[in-house]
Length: 231
Image (cartoon, rainbow, N blue to C red):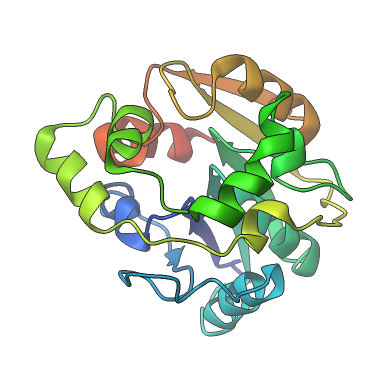
């Protein structure tokens, strides 16, 4: 009996599922782009959410997806949710691809992976300034190699996340599947040397280099699609 295998895409903080449109459009396999809660909303609507709320929302979307097994492709902080999902759906997950992702060790948080002193001050920044960076930071860190039109779309649709997404310690046991880290060599949000450590935390079987900023699915969608298909 043929097995129905799909690709599960998970976006990063502040973004939404539409960032994967150019990649998914060219795929010839089932694909599902997870949507984090309360997209395209202003203010602090996500302030009270817990990590479990993100995982639960993603799980509900997966439960309505008609595939037998899937590969997780997670971007940036989306890998934190992806690791929890990989643990939850261990019997169905057949691969894990991280794109410029933060990969905390089990028992640690996103914030704990950052270099000193950022790992100490990030919780304070999130507490007092919130989780939506200034527009200038979004443009320089997330959109440094995007067009003006693409940049405007990212800035205008950016959704503040819950602080818990950054600070919650997660526990997981990643299935024994192929693990690939796509290193973004022009990333201004997650520096390449930090990505090297994240690939080690993932115990990646392969590191694929990509000359791209933080959002290759937006700026280099076709190239990223070919890499994903190759994997």
